[in-house]
Length: 122
Image (cartoon, rainbow, N blue to C red; front, top):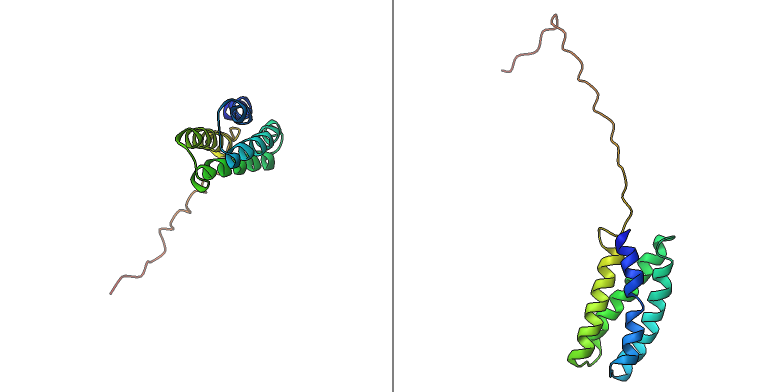
């Protein structure tokens, strides 16, 4: 649950980075649209797992966009670091709430009867 909270704090950084850093047009548009969408979905990540996975999908797209679009080193660094961090926090193993799993104990084996004759191997 802590990772979801951290993802909500980090989600608005991508649209903000689009205004601060000089980016090419595809990265600028992708950062604004995907960052805003991920911010809204990350806000609903506490109440619904579908929103959490959708935000993780958006973060995966942002991470892959650095490899799809022609990018400078600055654009690759921003997109990959934000995308991988959000993907790991929203879909990683520590993003789900803790759960208790209980298993039933094994039944005791039936006792062998002493008056039975067991067949011998030939």
